[in-house]
Image 1 (cartoon, rainbow, N blue to C red):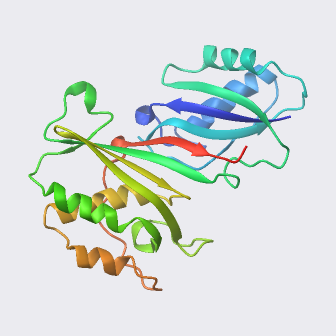
Image 2: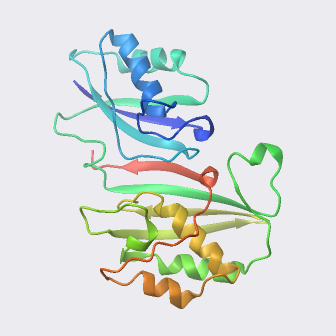
Length: 246
C-alpha cells in the first residue's frame, strides 16, 4: 500500500528535510517513528527538500507498507502521538502504486515573510528582518520580473539540472500589512536556494545594491551563469503546499 502524507513543521531545530547521517532532519524523525510503528524499516520520499531552518505547513511525502488495509486516521493519530511538538502529520491518504511525491507534483506554493524593521522575539523564527530603508516599489518590480518561464541558473546553487535550470513561476503576489509583507510564489518547481536568492536579489535592488537591468540579464537563456551572492535567510521561508492531480 502506498500512502501520501501531508506534514507541517517548524524547521528551526532541524538541518533541513533530507536524511543525513549526522544531524537531525525532518525525514530522519518521521522515518524513525514510522519504523517503530510498523516494526520494520520505512523510507519516506519527499516532494522536495527544504533547507535547514525552513518551515512547512504542507510538505508532502510518500511511503509504502506491506499491509493493504490500514486505518489511516488511527495511524495519523499514532504517529502524532510519538512525533515531537514541532512536527505534525496533517493527513494520510492512499494513492496509486505509480504515484511519486516528487515526480507527480504539478505546482508548489511557498511563502516568504518579511518584517521591515525589527521583529519581536516571537516573530524572529518566522520572519526575515529588513532593518535598512528600502524601496518597496523596486522590491515588487524585481519580483515581477521572475514571473513566467525563465532560465534560473543564476538563482540556484545547483551545479547541474535535468531541466537545464528552466522553471516556470506562475504567480508572485505580495500582501502588505503595515511593516510586514508576505510574498506568495507559485511555480512548477523551485531549485536549491532558488526562492531565497530571488528574495535576496529583490531586496538588493530595493536597497540599491543591484539594478533591474542586471537582474534581467541574469534571467536570459544563456549558458553563462552569474550566481548571485544575495541570499535571504531561511527562517522567512515556508513551504505552504504541493499540488497534485489526484
